[in-house]
Length: 194
Figure 1 (tube, helix red, strand yellow):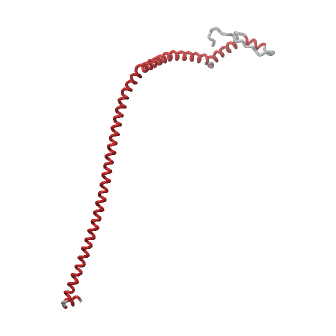
Figure 2 (tube, helix red, strand yellow):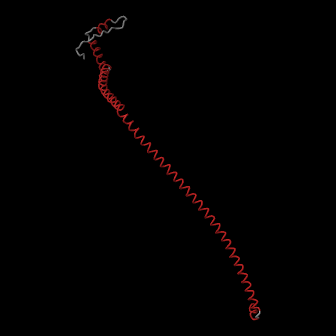
């Protein structure tokens, strides 16, 4: 599994203590099969399980690309924004301000004229309502006076009619009393009454 490149020899030493001389010789030699296996296991471990170098390289590449591309794009965007702001401050705002001031004065004058017209209309309406109310009150008073006069006249006419009726009743009573006296002179009519 070794790729044939330069390899650093791994030296394994046995724990210091006595009696391990045979083991030290079998693991410690550079060309021994155990040494090659350990070396291959280290490479496999670093390639399969240790991703830090690969991730760091990819991260550096991504950051570099991102900064280059984004940096240029952001510079263009910022330059465009700067130009727009400059144009707005130098040309658009003064033009808008002048136009607004000119038109605002005209609008204020028209608004004042409209307000004056509305005030005059309201005043006329108030005066018209007041005249109408005064006319209604005067008309109502006149109708009340006419009604009172009518009722007085009716009472006096009623008294006259009652007096005429009473007088007519008295005349009729006298006339019938006289007729009865005249009939009483004739005996034949007197018996009929009984």
